[in-house]
Amino acid sequence: MTSIPLINADQPDHPHLPDALHHMQQSRPRSSQLHLWRDQEQAHLLVVNGSQLFDLTPALEQQILQAIETGTENELLARLGLDGTPMINDEPPEAMPIHAFSLAIAQKCNLGCTYCYAQQGEFGGPAKNMSLATALQAVDTLVEQTPVGGKFNLAFMGGEPLVNRSVLYAATEHAVQQAKVRGVTPSFSITTNGTLVTEQDADFFEQHGFAVTISLDGIGETHDKLRPTKGGKGSFERIMKNVRPLLSEQRNMQVTARVTVTPQNLGLRAMLDQFLAEGFHSVGFSPMLNAPNGQGEMGRDELQLMLAEMIDCGREFERQTRQGKRYAFANMLNAMREIGKGTHRPYPCGAGAGYMGVSAEGDLFACHRFVDDDAGAMGNLELGIDATQQNDWLKDRHVHQQNPCNQCWAKYLCGGGCHHEVIGKGRLACDYVRGWLEFCMGVYLRVGS
Ligand code: SF4
Ligand code: SF4
Image 1: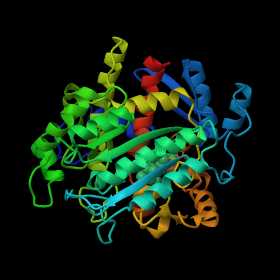
Image 2: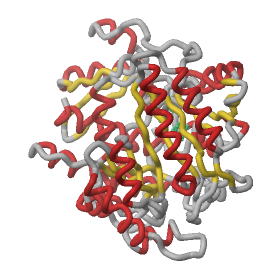
Image 3: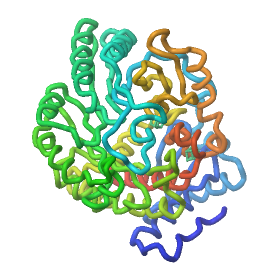
Image 4: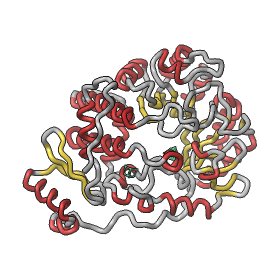
């Protein structure tokens, strides 16, 4: 096994960096069927088929080590009664009904974020708003696709969706009415930069139980440098002022802060604690891995530091959970939920399957990030989903078709990585992903089960 190179000497010391490097190195795949690891002096096992987790005795640890070294995992699993029919075969799912659309309701934005995947909201084309007719057609398609008694989610994204507020409101109200007629349950979400949110929006989101995600990339100046206005001014103070009514009003709605992590904003623990103290329902982090202009992308050293910060947040989560307190670190809450239900999936997300992005012109794409990108084209609202493009996508993107994912123990938890990042930049964050999963499985075995 090759070792994880140490972080550059000029990077600051970090108390959790040794732990991060340990998890990154230890989690490199040695078997596609099992993952054996040690955490806090205890040995643990993940059986990949079925995502089953166990604490191990020293004797069992030795047997498993030997099986991995000699390539006799099948025999060992059979002996332990842990063999079974593979839960995931090579076949993509049959084309499935759509249960979620994200509408690129405004392909324009008032901010000039340095790394924006949507190229300041315009996805490389002219700025445009979605028309009311297109938005209503998208809602009707989604409602029709939802089986009676089922649920659907309508997400508003951009650019900045509140640039096109009247269409957002009308589409939401239309979705509520049509859902009632068909006997289905709608849910709504919005991802916004927070600069245009009003008190009227707060009432509207509360009335319809929106999941509101506010993009925040730091506290004060750190945020301002990464998410300036197009004129180069800061946006942090204005966002926090706008968001406070939402934070105090949230009952049906949930207001989450989402941080895109770049080399310029690696102080995750400080952001988590500050945003939770402000009243956000939860706070989540994701690394910037694929920016159209390459700006703000995370490299190897920064991913090591990010994992160290995630572990810091995760240890605090563990401490608070033991005391019976809620510490709403979204990445950890999601991981606990997924591990707890034995998540087992051949894709990283629903993109191109039950979930699609709709462009301002009414074209369909695998998800919000693929809007106006042929790599994820799936048809349009007028003619419907292009079944050939959808089936080809699902066949190609199946984790068994991805190399080296087919040899990786994390394949059914990770699903092969975000399609948009992998297609654009390859798999640069696997050590980070596996190190984080390994850490989370340890926490789950200690406090989550
Ligand atoms: S993308 Fe995920 S499943 Fe694929 S090799 Fe990397 S960590 Fe493993
Ligand atoms: S492809 Fe990536 S960006 Fe799109 S829904 Fe999946 S994880 Fe999210």
